Image (tube, rainbow, N blue to C red):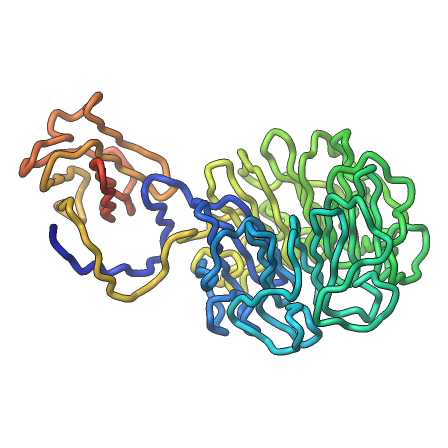
Length: 471
């Protein structure tokens, strides 16, 4: 066994190690920051970080995913305006970022750029963030809230901020929660929706425009299976696959073909077979059961993802996305999680919230780069038994792979995580692709496009990945 020094360099490319694609299982957005929970139940974040909302111990923005410090066992993550939340598999909640009005829930008002435990919360099964308030759903069906409360968004009958969790009044049997800008939503086990907080544009959906510091029932909604809050609008998904919306509609965020506000729910035009919804600042998203994504509302930065920057008051198809399993909306950007674990982003990118190593807006989806991979420029000492040499590198397409010992497979993976070449002991397209100790394998990639690829070599105990360039 020998020790080698491995330089891990952050590159502007998509690197999916060990044959997996992106390795994300959950996504979420804050105002101008984004998250993914990785398959190992750690989390990464990218985008705006002025208040420490990325949780990586710095206050520096990041254009690529950076690991949230010291958190493991994460099952859910959520973003507020400039704070962040995570739910662990032990039922505790952790928070970081801005804390001027107590949105971290730890008993003080000090900002933190690393995760801190929210006070006295156990048995939590869901979390959500509003502008400067936070919500948590307990396994007994009750809801707890903390942070800003000027408009009654904590739902506890007063308008006083709280830097520790307080119970939302009168709510039992709750199965889902969602935070808007300064309002909050809860879904009950009987399929009804309840709302509280700011109601300037009718976002509480009760037929009035009066704020409420206790939950009130949204008019005429039954059979609801999911809810989502935007800035001054709200969304609900019905068990028949239709979507309903209420509140502000200046940019068409209600998706009903006009731009008139509504303080009662109205049906979103022409949407059927929807399985998930999400709200942004003034845009809305829906995921169809065929894996496509639809969007409507504000589109100045391309947050609808349809290749234009034109607002739409009816749903339009997000370009080129299929196989999507989850969606999330930020203020002016959007995210989608693919069934292979890859994350796509579009919209505003001034702070790097698209995670593609640039600060350029995009009105079509772009892949998040370096997702769920260690991002460091440090020199790490590792122990490696399997020695692999790949040459020439760069190459015109014909590669030689020299091995130190017998191996079980060689795979070539492109930047989309697709295996373009696979060789195993049971099936070997190239006689020398599984060369014995000291021998050399030859693989012909001359038919592949120029660019970056990864050679992955496996034996019984180890996986080695080498970056190569075809030119």
